[in-house]
Image (tube, rainbow, N blue to C red; front, side, top):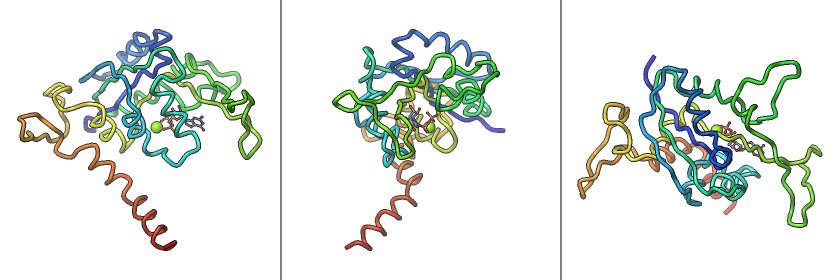
Length: 212
Ligand code: GDP
Ligand code: MG
């Protein structure tokens, strides 16, 4: 098995509830290394790029606002690049499922999202609850932690970290020096995004052309 990265974010609710140490301490029980870390005031463009895969989902704007700290009094996140064998799966097992209220009756609460996350009812401008097509009240998953999964991990780590912000012995991907002598990723996050979602883009272009 080879080394892989996982981008871990302490979302603004983790920052406001002082959960960073708790999360790190759980992750430290695994054979993983923190190879980059920083505090980030998240811009709209960074949040939108981070959640690019969800750009067509109805909650896209809501998760951008959440990551930017729009629902909490701390408009920043702590970003960590973890590295290790099977890092993504190990971390996802510890943080748990997307919905923090996904709890099986009679089973112990073990994941970090179950322990510290919550679901907040989303309201319209008049303060009324919103219902989805199946009649369920729409909630926001305030699930405290982000951790990359699968093919998105390289994209996410490169989006949040420049090569010089990652420990040199743990730079898993090729780097190059730009005209100003600054290290950059040979394949940038933007290149990766085009590659990862290119099928999707082609589909969209085909549809657009068909509608002309
Ligand atoms: P994750 O990888 O477990 O974080 O989950 P996803 O990549 O599917 O979704 C990204 C984030 O969007 C989640 O962490 C949630 O904060 C939010 N999210 C996902 N699904 C929903 C949903 O159905 N409703 C709302 N309001 N938020 C969601
Ligand atoms: Mg995800």
